[in-house]
Image 1: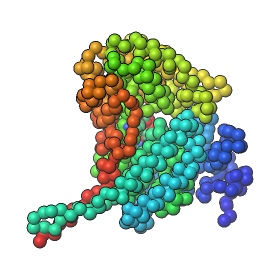
Image 2: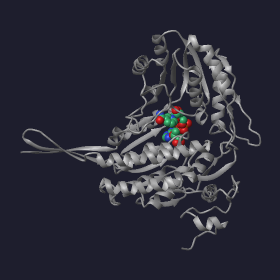
Image 3: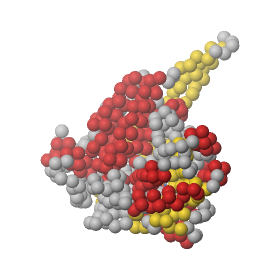
Length: 527
Ligand code: NAD
């Protein structure tokens, strides 16, 4: 088939995805690894078509006004690709495509097995291209490569989990009602909207769209402006897997324009938003105006309650691992460490020692243990909280601050530990960086009171050798999730949700999530 453009190199000629037309003024992208890495070559080839296009109705399209924005490598600050900066008309086009696909592609009426077969093909494609997707994600989000690979695998596992559920949920349930023939039927809603944050771009697309697709809905995804690339690559794989056109649509753009347009679109039958509480509120307000049901997965300020019977070294290692994982940009992280006074000093000194030895470096450098934060703006945020916390009297047990990495002009920070009053701004607000705030406690009841003294309600953990005590404390924590002797654990099948300022609308990853993406219809015939 003739192409409207001339490929720049031989790899591009061989595997150019349809519709990705390179711009004559495109930026020249630095190759990230040696030519012997075929996965990187494939990732580079995809990105070399900058400006990339969005994926609507099975077509690759620019924004109607031709505007684009640049996504950068947070480890170097260098542009990776230009992407369409879409607005309300583009979003409308995507919602219309999703609506058409819902009504006419046959997707909504397929049996769960037929749809499951197609979705398994998509999971197969993603799994096969895991190294390529992981390289795209690692560069775009500043993720350590192994972590990006884990995220892609998690997408696959999530999709397969929801396919499995879709095969076993009863669609039609006869009801035993005197004098009537009565049935309830579960049906997909229609086109659903998804707004995704930048910290786990591909994994969260998987958590969000998998139940919706498996239930027979169509989707419009708006990835974060900092990290749109892996979601665009999903469009390539959806095409390859034979997912009908318009079932999966990706619109790129800024939150205030593309995001706001999606949240307020009256054609959507459901909306799911993952991100900050501030934006979540705006999204919920927009949805309320259209009476669109909305699911909000928001931020957190989780506590880890550490009793005096723990193995101090092992527990310190686990929590240091949690706070440095993806440079602390994890909504459910333990960012308040409440430690029994008897072991407080030992615990602090163990954590300080471990954090000092964390290798901060470029995300694709195999020696790096902690990469950059996602943007200059995010680095500013972390540094501002360190300063504000200190100004309000917090002690800096480990100073933190900006980090430099030789030869890389990226957005690096060092891990930090703060301590002091829990009314300090750094103890109350979500920082979203490798920063933990410590305080000692003397009794179980005091620890619980401290843990629950927050506006958030996402996830906490309790650490103790006494499992009865651990279970008791876990049950009294006011949040969606309590973990025992672990932090950040997400087995498929266990609901994961936030309450209070951390979310509303049902959560993700469980059987109930699948049901959220079905609407009930009751049918009654008087006898
Ligand atoms: P954010 O709220 O700034 O942005 C999230 C998404 O919303 C992005 O796609 C953005 O473009 C879009 N957006 C921004 N303004 C908008 C508007 N006015 N209308 C509609 N959409 C808009 O959040 P972020 O900085 O990308 O992500 C970090 C936040 O996400 C943290 O608070 C973190 O805790 C939270 N988070 C929560 C979970 C969870 O499962 N609970 C998971 C990951 C991240």
